[in-house]
Length: 89
Image 1 (cartoon, rainbow, N blue to C red):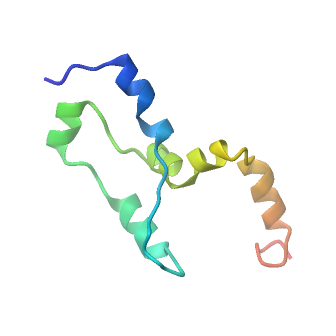
Image 2: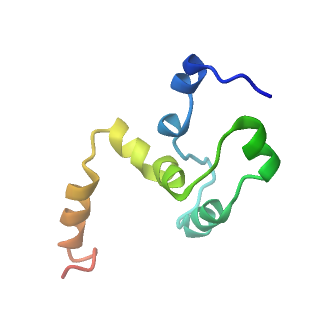
């Protein structure tokens, strides 16, 4: 069994991961869909006492970066919903 360390968990973990790719793609939809569908194998979940939940995937895909750059997600979502592209008219 792997020993859990508070220092290691503070230095890493779902609140400190951001998605990134150097693959030059115009639309990352397929990549995001694959990531969202991915499930950790049971042996890794048990050995490392981790899971890749929907909430953790959201953090990795954008919420952590938003926090890092000081972006208010709710305010930005509201703003984009009102522009001509965001569907708000």
